[in-house]
Image (tube, rainbow, N blue to C red; front, side, top):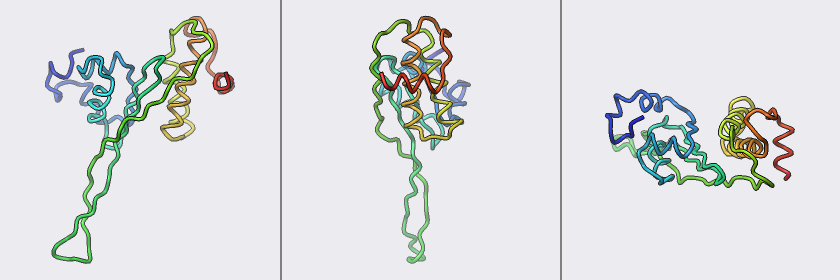
Length: 171
């Protein structure tokens, strides 16, 4: 895929779709490739955050370093209406928050990183979309999923379950 510097954004289907995304879950390599920001994770995160929905978020997974999360928040700012001093007109502006850093859980022994990103995404989506938990809690759960995956050989040795994630969180 070409970086943002090599193409007109309106002609890039991925970038057009990002405007409709609630939460985008790239890893650091994907974020770098899409944004063209090289190894600067925070710059890639900010670049992507400006392209998701106005009330969306980007969760950038960083492997053993955890995750960075940047949310967009729609703030309603009131402006005084000169003609009617007692009434206020409301306009919306988007504010991109400072990224939140989430460290990866400490694991006793790394065996195989295969499937860690998929396990993160599965655990995150389960907590966020199925259980309707806040984004921050879903990120922590996703990190448990990814950490659980690296303690086993291969991508499918053990089924990712709530019990397994709870056991991982206590190690």
